[in-house]
Image (cartoon, rainbow, N blue to C red):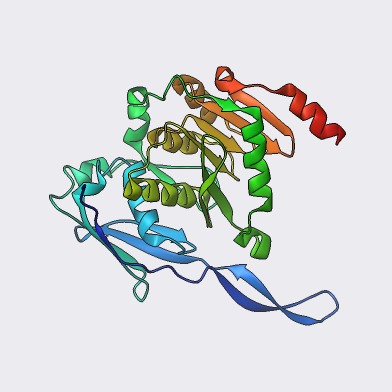
Length: 280
């Protein structure tokens, strides 16, 4: 049985009630997303401060370390301890991170809300990633995923101002759904949960409400996931990296509509479904 780190369970409240006044001077109470800083320390060395809802801080921290390629295996981590009183998470490894100063010295600020950052060496590792060539996705499964997201209860529907990410099985079953102030945090939280549960991405589909930027594509690829869906669009670099990796990038996924930008050979098209559903 592979060893797993000791984790706290320090999920915070995701929303906060605030009083507002409308254009008629009427007072009411609404929910807004919580947002709080979480400073990550690895072996007592300050690494980064993430702004987060705080719904899954341990998974977020693990996913961040995984997607930044700072820790190669979850078995290298002894514990992850979150303390909201000081807004910090302490990660203790068994043997430390080699050359951590050099590996974290170069950062690239990424696009999007909940500003993310990627340590510069990640782009150098794209060529080493291989996605499963046999992975396929049915059009009917894509529709099932989009419909599941449409009906999913969420902080966004309650309070707005957040992004969501979801992990689906190859037949469209929802496995994980995470929301945070930025899509970068949400994808990292799912990566952390996959790491903890020893779940591979070869037969999985990833959905995000945000743009398909280069960072999102690289993170999806690092998780081994061949399909990346979004209700939004993509960027030029996101498109370029996905094409290089042979990843299926599907944008504007709303209702029965989608745009397959890259990896179209992975799709099992069932165009009659779009016609039937549109008429219905």
